[in-house]
Length: 574
Ligand SMILES: Cc1cc2nc3c(=O)[nH]c(=O)nc-3n(C[C@H](O)[C@H](O)[C@H](O)COP(=O)(O)OP(=O)(O)OC[C@H]3O[C@@H](n4cnc5c(N)ncnc54)[C@H](O)[C@@H]3O)c2cc1C
Image 1 (cartoon, rainbow, N blue to C red):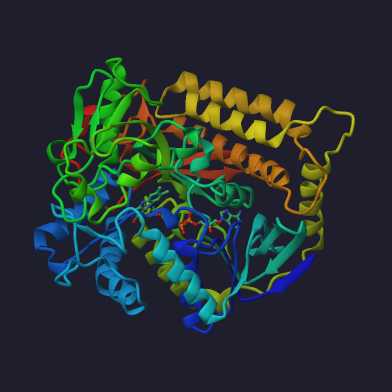
Image 2 (image 1 turned 135 degrees about the vertical axis):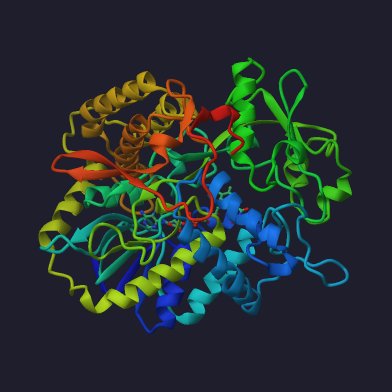
């Protein structure tokens, strides 16, 4: 086992984790990044297709700036966001984020006259190199910045537990280097969780294999409070077949340099979503699309798993291909572009909820534990917003570092975590029939999709809880890797993931039962109305002894507020 000592350990090497580490480095604070995949090459960040312009950037009018803020609060977060935080974040994106990226050498796409190409409309966006692929050059640049700054990284290493000092504060992390099978401990005064979303809890997802909700599960086991875990965002336009293409999206937003975007058609060939007509704010209309799709599903003209289609058959090929990657999917699948429409299906995209934080410092409810990016429950993400978290958390940690204690010696906890992982590798009863990690993972995802998926009710959610109790009783004690090999054993990693997925999925189901309304992408069959009177509130989940308790916390509505008390969610325009 290798033991590292540093001032701050950052868990995760996506947009949030990298920016947190870079900002700490600028402040002269030593940070180590531990990353389940490769820094800058794992997680959701490299899938970001384009970058929203906020404030008065690049000729944005006052109205466009206001629309962007309104989009973020209403359509992107269904009002479950601190509006003062949103205001500060928007101002930072306009004044610091984009200038800093250009200065660092990120190329924003320009036309032949040298003007930056934007998507037209009420809310505008730009792309790094090409729309659909912006995350790749963006994160390549971050990786280079991390290397250039000499920030230590421990890659292909999964953090499996938070270590605690005797006073309960977080003392660092325990992890497993997947390629060598070696354990590591990183002791630090502050720990920043930047593990991204938890989308791989569902059968269909845009997330990578790393998105097994490790951050939520570890933070909960350590006693941190959660917020709005039930709020899951869904994509409606991802490729249905083959299943391995489920992250490939037929992007519904305006294209760079064109007024048009993909259209959606039901199984009878009728168009049911045209972004120009149906989406009043014209950016990231996933929830608006989801509501349109739900109506088609109720009418028997689509399923959440397919039976409806999307494409660009109303566009000229050159219009799509000038600045986007969108034709690639069709061509690679051997389809006639742009004439063919592709069968699409729903996919779990971002989890809006997550660990509860104080947004002025990004501190969690446990001393020494901080959060940045998609794993937080304060906002629904976007690459610029999670980057802002990286700045705020670095400031928060720097201000408080001298008050955080030096880590204790933690031999007992280290032994416990080693024993837990060894059991997942070798099992604790050689005679018991093993439960295969890959199969259990699929079973959890299928159960979440069926019973806690797009539409759910108290009955299906309670059934999900019963299923989890049975899994805990009958399968978890027999869970072990297929082969007792230490190095590069991804089956062992699957077993580690399974435990996190079950811990987090149960919390998601409990939180879904608690929110007795439907709000945007959160759809309860038994509570179809959006209820601003009772539920325009954070749904907080605290640990209480061996159990849990819920609490409501109102939101600051300083800029925008809904103009109704209760209404059928499917008829609410956001
Ligand atoms: C398909 C797709 C398209 C998107 N399109 C856009 C877009 O067009 N524009 C936009 O602004 N945003 C877009 N987003 C959202 C944006 O990408 C995310 O908001 C953002 O990348 C989240 O960053 P993050 O750093 O929080 O998480 P991630 O980038 O997911 O990083 C998480 C990191 O944590 C690591 N990790 C996880 N668990 C552990 C563990 N146990 N131990 C160690 N490390 C761990 C992972 O390996 C990874 O490095 C898109 C997202 C997806 C999935």
